[in-house]
Image (cartoon, rainbow, N blue to C red; front, side, top):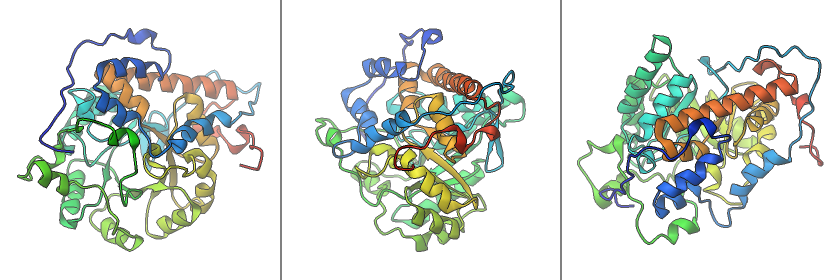
Length: 382
């Protein structure tokens, strides 16, 4: 992936009538019409046969609700907290690399939309814009929203590099820029096998905002930002946690054994995630792994989920099965590509509207009122 090459995504008015976009899925077609084939493959693709990619969505569709009636639902409150930080709804935006390939404003548009809506945004280590630029954009939108720069919390997702000093510098920069947590991704010892990326004729390219001052380019920069961490072990987590006073979230947990170790290692939360089906194919769908992880964490920290969230019904399902919040990836990427910041804002608003409708019909007027009893057990006890 040569860092000196960069595909151009033109800024032009969206062809979408955003007021009549009815579902997050509606953004994908518009995005595909605007993006180069290589970028479409990068966003949409999963690993090997894409079994886990499909299962992430299918796991939600298998679940069925147990709605309660004659419950007072004249006022639906979607407000919640993540690690003590208030959010307008218990969903946020996943860390996604190189958003500048989707829209010229990239992560700046995503941060502004998230802050304006009061939801959380996770910024990737390999963002197109620097973490400081993204923080400034989000803070400005937060000021416009509520006057104190609050908006929603911004967290920094960390890939640990071979040169630990570089990773520590990134963490220190994130703390100085006002990020509220460090999200350590742990499921990438090697890159997953992705057929669609191997078949590409052209390299994807991209601009790496957090490494602009490193004084290298091309293959040298590729090596510098290498996200693989085959030597990273649980023994390293304490060192990483020592770099900052910010809470540490560990992303990429799929089994109870690792969830327990994460809590013992000082994590404040874990993200149940299979990297959007992009790493180990035939790993469990995130939703299928959720209950085991929740049981292992046993209230010692918060549990989040990403992978397969496409509807407000999915948000409620994950909350009922024990998640404290969910994070959304591809649908927000398509929204950004289709219509920039207004597209992301519309996607967030749609998801929140669907969340409110689902809560009202389920008989759950608040986030705290959503319980395990609101989702039926699957055959086999899940």
